[in-house]
Image (cartoon, rainbow, N blue to C red):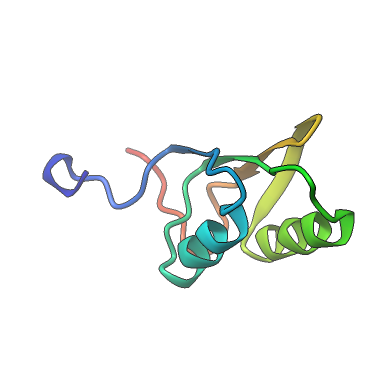
Length: 87
């Protein structure tokens, strides 16, 4: 990505069979914040745990725009902290 002048991906889909919380934690710690983030939460899953993940993402400027079963799609607004606008 750096070779092409990109600091972060525009779209990232997490479908990591139960490791989504660890992957999300790593992304947030390293400030890898794509414009669109899709997360496939694995079964069984606690509604409270999903809610916590949603809250963490909202604090980083993401809006939850779609839910299909356990697939959640978030969009980060271009004017949110840490997001650069494309030329």
